[in-house]
Amino acid sequence: LSRILRSHLATIPFESVDPFVRRTVEISPEAVDAKLIGKRRGGLCFEHGSLFRRVLLTLGYDVTSLTARGFAGELRPRAHHALKVRAENQDWLVEVANGAATPTAPLLWCYDIAQQTPHGAFRLSWRNGETVLEEEKRDGWVSSYSLSHDPQEPADFEPGNWWTTAHPKSFYRAYLICTLAPENVRILLFNNRLTVRRPGFEDDEQILDADSLERCLDTVFGIEVEPIWRPHLRRAVQLGDELAA
Image 1 (tube, rainbow, N blue to C red):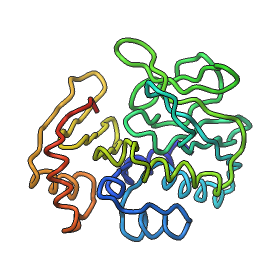
Image 2: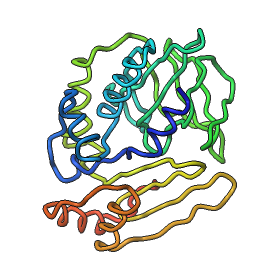
Image 3: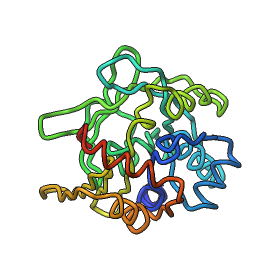
Image 4: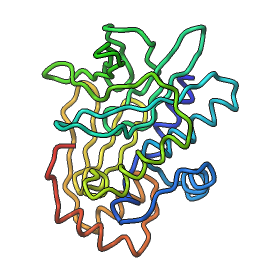
């Protein structure tokens, strides 16, 4: 399970290109497979969650889809797809698409215990009847999202997918985001700021112009840029680093 997760996170980017360029995102299995496999693209949580869930089910794992509410200063709808997986007679949180805060190893479903991953420490806590994912930062533990324990079916994610990709207030319509997590490195693109994070080292950051941004998408994230994206890439450069990645 750990090896499959690591391979997925190192190979298939978490990316917001489609909502950023105002393209509809479909999460049917056929649409997800055509994009993430056929076109060798990435996607957001509902796309990654759909693909990885079906892979694990095919391999014989017991998988439960769950929905989460992110912490972002204001109350948000439940618009995240996470997985609970049964392995070795224990439950694990398996996360494939939480952007820069994605645990790169399965997390044992136990509370208030720091768990090391190749890209930092995470833990689960119990709060108000839900499971909260927390990441250890320099200033302490930061809450990422709160998980409901109610099992979800694929149709349950359609409203969250619309909110995430089409709502006027969607974060992913407003900003260009891409992340990958190869071995011991986390690569982050926020608009035109490329950040490479290595545990124990200072971040390596670059500010990209439009041409460099297009090359970055191609060579770093493996995303072939379509000509109709170019005005939006210029918009990403103009937006710059409005928020920290």
